[in-house]
Length: 134
Image (cartoon, rainbow, N blue to C red; front, side, top):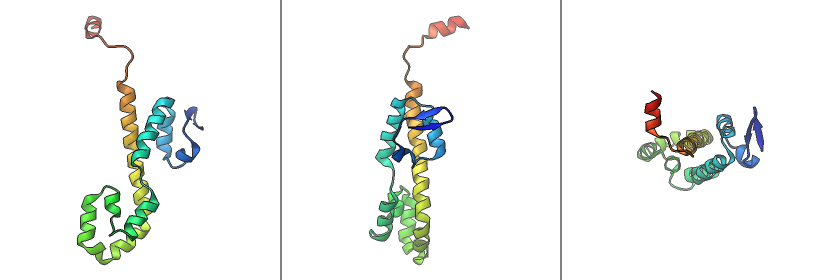
């Protein structure tokens, strides 16, 4: 369990070490049920650096497709990796690209989990009571 400024995250430390600090802060505000839901949603789609390098080195340079950036992937293929200069640069850029993709995925998973949290109500709202109060 990770504690952040009176916020508790019940998720495993091996999982939370890979998350951005903003994500951890937002997770700390959620109940344990929604934290587990976030973990489930995130683990379905996160990308590993090892697989990204495998796509870059051994498959026909499909690393942008692996990260869901098909426009760049076609441009990469069209220019033959920028005459291999772009390919060499991507050898160094790939960790940052994967980290950025996973951060965007964390934000998307948080929004999905929060939307479930916001719209789940235990009591129905009666409009007649709202109109009577006005």
